[in-house]
Image 1 (tube, one colour):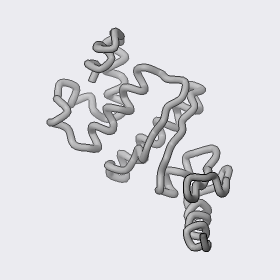
Image 2: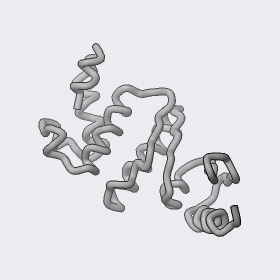
Image 3: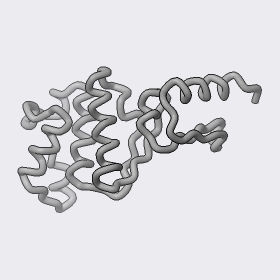
Length: 138
């Protein structure tokens, strides 16, 4: 997991690497190569790297797409904690109303343009808005 960081000239403390792997549920897979991990596990490794490098802005493209529902919730909770507890900005792209409900603000894109916005809405409200936008004539 730390190889890309090392190639970039960064040497993260071992304790931070272990903690990041534990947070994403991969502590027991630390020595595995990418080909030995499932798609969902590889996705969680990417999140662990973000936990280690602590970027100001984290871009997450369908972060739960290859995950089972339990692991998906854990990942979303971690992203939420990065925003709340560490002051990071998380920009997430998703088609999943449940994932979107973890956000402070949801922007709806239609044909590449912001078409609508919701704040503080749950999955049902987001799904309703998505359905309405998809049904609207172009």
